[in-house]
Image (cartoon, rainbow, N blue to C red; front, side):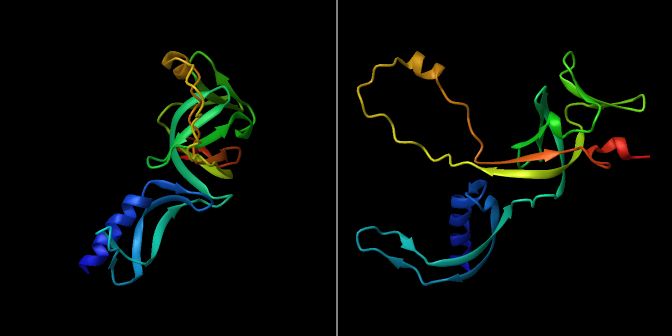
Length: 184
């Protein structure tokens, strides 16, 4: 039993809170199905095990309805957070007809039959998954040529961080959008 705890701990260090390409966001090891007897390489001193395990993964299916909180808004759309996963985007084109961006408040407003429904920050929002994207974010090989750029120049040319796994979602159906809109 102690061996399984140690193996589970090492597997969680390796996989928990990391994205595996075309699998999803690994949350935690669920259980160990099989673990071999440990073996030690003669020049290493570390124990090695061949392990078969199951892991809990976050990867919603296309069409699944989820709930999160509005993290930020720009005229391009809304960023949503589920607490453990923040790379959710709802493009402005995937919102209810009659939705517009209010520049002064930096939020979206849905006008329907003369009523105004605001999409304020930190409000709970229900959305449908439309697409997912996996990006390879493995480090690229550094330029091995002579170093000519100063640190100031290098910092100004930093590329924006790319999420290894992201969701594109919509709120353009009845029942979707800010959850308080649909409570009677």
